Structures are given as C-alpha cells and as structure tokens.
Image (spheres, rainbow over the protein chains, first blue to last red):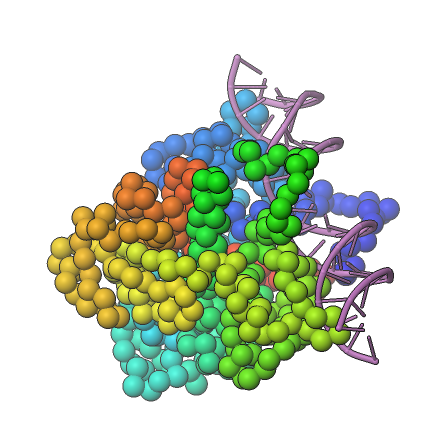
Length: 231
Length: 231
DNA sequence: AACTGTGAAACCTTTCACAGCT
DNA sequence: AGCTGTGAAAGGTTTCACAGTT
C-alpha cells in the first residue's frame, strides 16, 4: 500500500521496531481487556494469568495471549501479567493518554442517553461538546454540558477530535460532511443510514435495528431446527 | 457438533436442500441490504443491479453477489435483481415474517431512547414491552407502552422473544439470568459488562465506549504516522 | 452487451500445541 | 511446575476474474 510495506530493510535498524501493526480484530478487543483489567485492579489484584483475564473478558486464553503478543507486551512466564503495567500499555496503544475530544451532534433521545452514558466517561474518553441544529434546544443543560448550535462546530473542533452522530437518518450525511469539513477524522454513526466519507476518515457505525435483525435470524434458525428435529 | 453435521447422505434427498448455511458475516449484512432495498422500493425502482445495490449498501458488488448467492437468491443475468422479490427473500431469511416479540429491560436514559428509536419499528421488529426493577417507574408511559415491573417478566415473555438489556452494568447479569429463566433465547446487551449465558442462548452486545476507544486507536495511529512522516 | 453466480486465490482470524522462560 | 509467546494448522471472509445466462 505505502512505503511502510517495504521488505526488511538491509540497512541497520537502530530501534527494534516493535510497532508490528496490531490486527483490527485485536484492536476491537483491547477495550474489553482494559475494562476487565480495571475491574481486577479495583479488586486489588496485582497480577493475572492469561487464563483468568480471558475468563473475565469472555474470550479464550490462546486468543488473549496472541492479542497481547501483538503489542509486544511482556508478561512473565510462570507468573502472568502485571495488571497495572498491562493497563498502561493497552491505554497507550489505544491512545487514551492523549487528550482526545469528542463532539456529539444531535441531542434527541439517543443523544441525551449517550451524553449521560457512564461508560463513556469511565476511562480517558468523555463527551466534550453537544451540538444540535434545532435552536430551541441550544442553551439546554445536559449531563453538565450546554447544548450549542451546529454552526459553532468549527470553534468546538480543536485538535484531534472524534465526532458522534446521533441525528435522524435524513440529517446524518449533511452533519457528517460538516464534521469532515471541520477537520474531524473519526466518526461514530448511530443514525440508521449508510454514510460516505473521504478515505482518510475512519467511520464506524452502531445500528440498533440491525443488531435486532441479526438476533431475529438466529431465533428463526433455531425455530427451523427445532421443527426439523420433530420430523 | 450434532447430527446435522453428517456427510452427504447416501439416501435420496427429496428436496434440493438449498439451506446452505449462510455465513455469519453475510447474516450481519442482510439487514443493510434490506434497508437499501426498501429505499429503492420507495423510489419506485423495480429492479436493481448488484453494482447499484452494493453502492447503496456501502459494500463492493462481488461481496454482495456472494452474499446473495448464499440465500440461493436468483437474480437474472443481464438484468439484475427484482427489488420486491429480494426484499421478500431477505425478510424471510431473517425471520421478519414470523411475529417475534422484543422485551426491553431498563428504562433509564438509554432504554427510553431505544424505546423511541424509529429504526426498530421500521420493519418487522418493534419493542413490545418495557420492564424496570424500579417500582417508581412502573406505570409510566413511554413511546406508547406502559412500563411494567420486572416481576411481570414471565407473563410478558410469550413464544419467541428477544430480550434487550439497557440496565446499569451491575444489574445486567441478574437481569440476563432472569430473561434466560423466562425462556428468552436471544439477548442484546447494552450494559458495559461481560455477560455469561448458557450455550443455547445467543448473545450480542453493543458497547458505546468500546466503539469510541476503537476510533481513539485509529486517531492515535494516524497521529503517529503523521509524526513519522515529518522525520 | 450486460450482469449474475461461483470456483480459486489471497487474506485475515482463531485455535492448537509446544518450545522456552522463570 | 506453571505460564507465556508463537510457529503452524484450520477455518472463515473477501476479492478476483470469468464462465454462463438472458
């Protein structure tokens, strides 16, 4: 894809280069490990085995070890992982040490829920600004923040920022475009619609009705199997 | 795993057996195709090519065709897919024709947002009952439904049901256990915690803070890369 | 000519099983 | 003895490219 993809350089590499790449599937699990580790730390545990941590995170231990090996993380053979050290490593890898502001657009039911959602605040990331296109909502206080108008977007987005879209579907693409214009390069979309963004922008979506439909599929399949078993 | 896994039966199979299995990755995309198709149908389109539908769904066309081929879906070569027919096929596959009730537990901020979320109602699936453990909330009207007490759970869960957990993390496992006892076999968890369920129960989770942390990782990586480029 | 359906290749993820460290 | 880190195998997913159908 780019120059970083070159074969092993023949010249001497001064630093061991342990930025190995970290597969996406692993990245998606790091936050789960992090939460489990915080739980253990709160209980006063100082070390943990891959077996125990995997259990707490709901994955199998081989997967956990492989995941951690991608961060070049060092556990101690015969002992396990140092809880605090691992928390620090994963947090650094996730970029939770750098301050990273989060802007939420759309303070309807869902936006309100997200603003108040404890899980967000828990570690490192919290919502910093609330915006809405409806002027009658501007000035409202939600979860300790004052709702500002969409037009203030450029003032609000300073430095590295993540945008969260919690508007109705028909407003989502326009909001998305404005976020991108303002310099946001990571967007989390809750609106039930497909958004398009330039390739330098990371886009993730959470779609509540899709999750339900996937479960519906499994229910349906279970029902079909049960009927089959009767025959 | 079980008897359905036997090798090709030597006996004559009366029906062609086109229940091929449908990979998980495909199942997860069917709802997206379905939404895109409804959009096209609303615009009056009667047929659509894999290229156009893929575009609307935000995937590439080879993937779309492969996905649809798993349903044994027949498009017409040289023409494309019949929109209504495809809607019917995908809906059937997802089990959206069977009535399937959805029970939501926890009517805090998030539960309220989910209850009012338009996307749910859109096609086939809608929330049928709201439950909460807090008696002061019982009787409240939300999105046309009356909040009932958690103890009414057995009355509410009739036939095939999907449970949605929108409680605080520390209540989630108990609620989950009660749903399972009541006979629920598919659960969607919004609480930021790892739940354990018996193997016959399907469990999916949506974790808002995890999504943000994944984006944080990508921001972090982009920043690191930009710095590297300066050197 | 246009477009689907699908083997085969490429890629990514998970799991296994054990060498190697403490 | 106990537990991590990791090659190698197995399994799943995406992409390619084209034969086959209308």
